[in-house]
Length: 465
Image 1 (cartoon, rainbow, N blue to C red):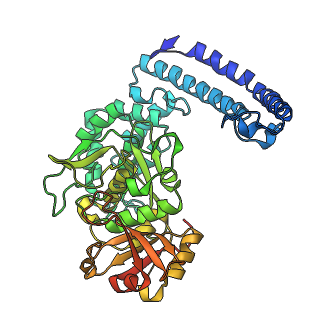
Image 2: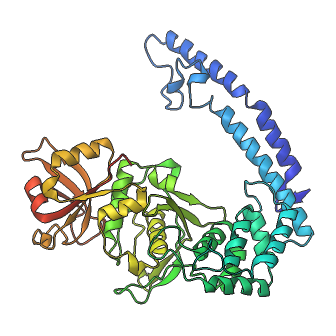
Image 3: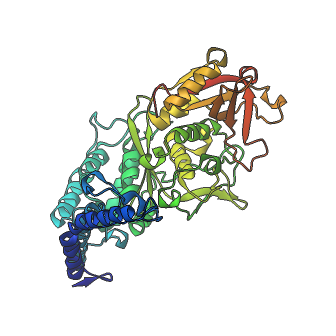
């Protein structure tokens, strides 16, 4: 039985073969490590190999204590085998559903999830018809109870099951849902708490439904904003266009904040500087807080005022005009800073609502910690150096008179990169989130006296990020 170019019985056979041969990786490891050790003994002090892949193996004859190749082939082969089995189950079940007249978006056909259950799809549709017209109740204040009840039920479905349900809905059913969503006025509302039922629906649909299904839903569920308002006071001609770039650098390389962080025409230096400061201290932080969904969207984990995680899903369409992208710029050809900025704009209700703020406010949103803000007169460079060495993120904000120094921008948040306590006098180096191509110096080194005279606030996370 072949499907979408895949012969699932043969793929299952291949997966079974992977599983069967995976234990041989440990034997191969011992044999190769032992051979290299023997050769080194015969080389009279010369290395047995100069290959960076083989050098770590010399003497590592116990694979249980070694995490590289070839010993790591066993868990890799086992994981791949299991994943292939699940994906084949998904393919076969999707084919059965399609033969029975249940449409699913092809983008989800090879998802690594439990295969869709036709009974759950039918039950969800029946639940919708039975509860979408419900009203009142206290669970969904500022929103229709029916839409909230249906959301709770639909949230139990796998992405493929949800896609099948939504694609099977008639225009009349979608109109009922849209009307219910329009009854509530609660969105994220400037980033407070969980938001309302509209936010929950949009986040679920954006993160789980396939592109074809989403196109139909976005045309009919018009009471969901889908995209944050791209316009600001300084940019009134912004519209959305796709940006086809990788989310992160290739091969697991860490983000390069000097190259990646580059602001555009919106005053969110408070956020971008903090994003750089957090990533500087923990290069894996963005990868842990942005999930790339099977349908091509991105789910970013932000945090509300109480420190509770809030997931915000956005796509790769970014604000632009005839001159190109207008806000965060992909200076190093990666998308993650733009995705983070768009998630903040969605969370706050539009790009116009992310202008102006302080470093501690954005650190709260990015990390969930209760960040602190102090006067530079109360925080010495030695204290900043200690905090950086502990792994805390630090930013500083300039005064309105800072532009008297031609290197600086006034009323602007900077990322603190390093402190040199061995300099005479000690210095601090800060980074302008305008980016390397900005009209002001990208990196600026200041004495402690300049830091205290030209800056009026210093913000930091109280704990390691």
